[in-house]
Image 1 (cartoon, rainbow, N blue to C red):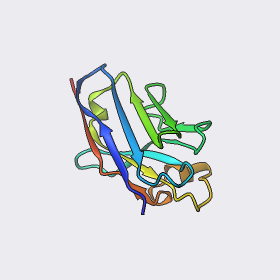
Image 2: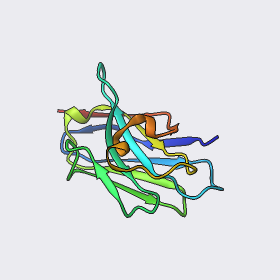
Image 3: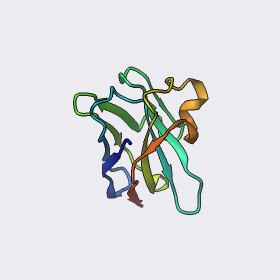
Image 4: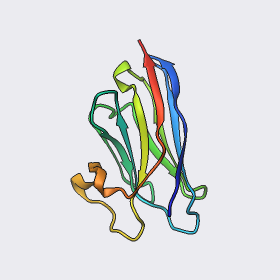
Amino acid sequence: QVQLVQSGGGLVQAGGSLRLSCASSRRTYTAYAMGWFRQAPGKEREFVSAINWSGAYTTYADSVKGRFTASRDNTEYTVSLQMNSLKPEDTAVYYCAAVDPGHPEPRGSSWTTEKTYEYWGQGTQVTVSS
């Protein structure tokens, strides 16, 4: 069983920055394709970003494109989400998620689909004040 442990998040003023990290406990496996999702109060969980196993491919929701950057360090089995120019509408609980390494890497719109990801972090709160 893979465990994903998230860190980072917190409270920041609009225009500020935060960095989220997600570490995998399954260090015997090669890197996973990873995704980031968020859920705001009263709303459905939505896709934010994803990164393939090598870090060579990333994709972003239109709402965060140009402001958020996904990266990974496979020597540390960690992925990160750098969030800049934060807005109050970015306030949400953020989740990292991993694709089982035994499954094919996602293609096209499957990167943005929750059911693509088998393992989920515990979630971390990001609050952006105006």
